Length: 186
Image (cartoon, rainbow, N blue to C red):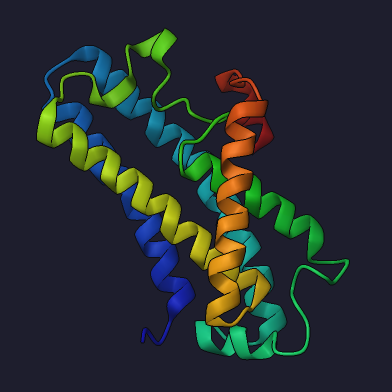
């Protein structure tokens, strides 16, 4: 178990950009490099927002230990409090942006950049990029359940399935925003 679970999460979510930048640069294509630079700008636009939401939850719990935050929520959820409900909405929007799901899928804007940073990859490299992206979605769903809903192990899996449904529902419902709208939203 990590002692500073929240800090570990923030460090890993911030390091996600380096893989995208290296993938875009090493494919030796100007379109892939443009897609990687766009992904970096998108990441910067919501990483600060995610950190502030997590700091609000950490201040309420009084600890940066993920287990302590979970124990603090033993009787109540963070989401039930009126002060934390807007933070939870901001967190869900940030999770959609971080996992590159619609309406924030600018990293893979097919109509603008020919599939973004992964334009020159095929077979194994392409599969690894998308496996990393979908494992990021799984991890973020479970982290959201642990951080905001404070659920037990059995209930956490059910809540994670609900978040998967929300992610898929958002992808099928909302159109892709323009890039300047995302930056203004942040």
